[in-house]
Image (cartoon, rainbow, N blue to C red; front, side):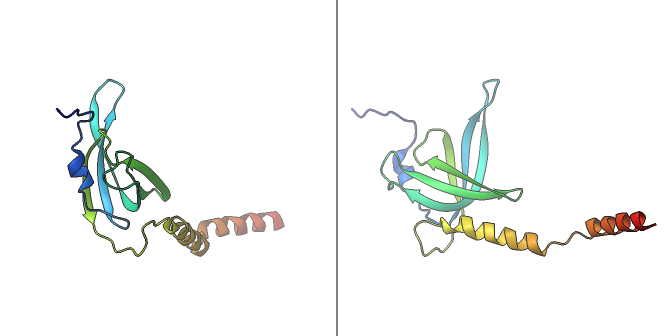
Length: 134
């Protein structure tokens, strides 16, 4: 007699074939205030998979950008709060852990911020300067 502690099919979860660089959508169960449960999707780039595949404490890290802010979330692979995991797109990565993407994304945002010019702000400064002269 096998004792089953979790409703998750651990064999299916362990056989999921996704790795660093893949875009993955995770549907997790969220309990609202009134006691109802709903599914919420989190789609992002897989940065890392840790602690193997068969281990019950295996985790994976996803990263997405929401409104210009980077958001990372660590999911336990065998968690019963995860409804399903979908592989959206395969990526080709030459590293097992893609932590350098954090710095790369921040650097690109800094470059964009330097190149942005706000013409309305410069006009208001000129108008104020001309009013003080007269």
